[in-house]
Length: 376
Image: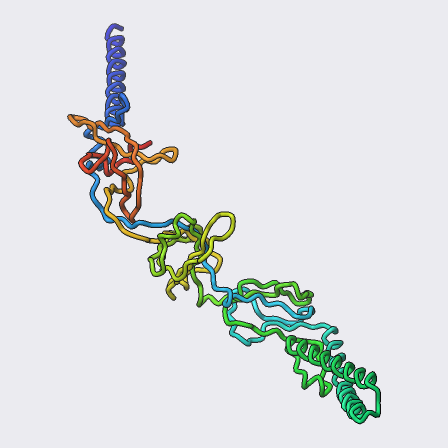
C-alpha cells in the first residue's frame, strides 16, 4: 500500500514538472513585451529568419497619385439612334461583335416612312407646276400685264414648295432612303441603319419587335484601337505634370498586373467641384488588348526622382493609419526592440522611403525582416 502511494506521488510530481518545463519553454519562444520593449529570444530570431540592418540610401521616384478610367476620345465612340422611330425588324449583332464603318447594323420598320415618301412625291410633283407658274407670272409682271400681288404669291408658293422639297429630301437621306427611287414610285416601309464608325459593340438595347424612338440609344460602338487613359489630378499637383512623363497604373478590380503609359495631354482648365484637371495617357497595342473601356484605374504619374533612406516594405508596421519600425534597443542573449513611429515618403517595388527623425536615421539598427511575426 505504501509503495503504491509513493508511486502515484512520484507520477504526479513528474507530470507537473513536465508541464511547467513545457510552458516555460513555450514562453521563452514567444515575444515578450516589457517596459514598452519587444523581447525576442535567440531561438525565435533564428527560426523566424529575422534580419537586422540600417536604412539604405535608395533611388525613389517622385509620383503624383491619381485615378480615372480607360476611355476613348469622343470621335471614336458612337451612340446609334434613329432619326424617325420604328420597330426592330432584324439584327444579328450582339455585344462584343466587331463592325466596320458603313456596315448594316439593324433594320427598322414603320408606316411613317411610307407617309414621308408620299409627302415627298406630292411636293416633287407640285414643284414643277409651281416653278412654271412663278416664271409665267414673272414674265407677265415684267410686261406689266399682271399685278405685283399675283407675281409675289406665285413666287412665295414656289419657294415654300422648294423648301419643303429640300427638307423632305434630306429626311429621306438621313433615313438611308434613296430619293431617286421614291420619285420613281419605289416606296419602302423599312430602313437600314449603318455603322458610323468601326469598332466593337459595347451596348445593345435592341430586340426584334421592340419600338425604338429617336431618343433611344439602339446600340453603342467603341473603337478600342484608340483606348487611352483618362485620369483626374488635383489642382495642387498640376504644375508637376508634363507631357511625356511616365505613368504606371493598375486595374484594382481585375488584376494585380502593373501597366505603363505616358502623359499625352494635360487639361488646360480646372473642372467640377472637386477642383481636378484631366490628364490623358497613351497605351501600347499590347496593353490595349488587355483592357476594356470604362475600367477604373489607380495610377502614379512619375514627375521626378530623388535619393532617400529606404527599408524593405515588410519592415513597416501600420496601425490606425500610423506607421512604425522596430528599432533595436539592446542585444545580449536576447533582442529588444522599440516600436518607433516614422513618416513614410515615396515607394518603389521593394522599398519604402522613411523620413529621418531624432529616433531613426541612416545609422539606426532596426528589424528589416520578420517584422510580421512581432507586429501583431
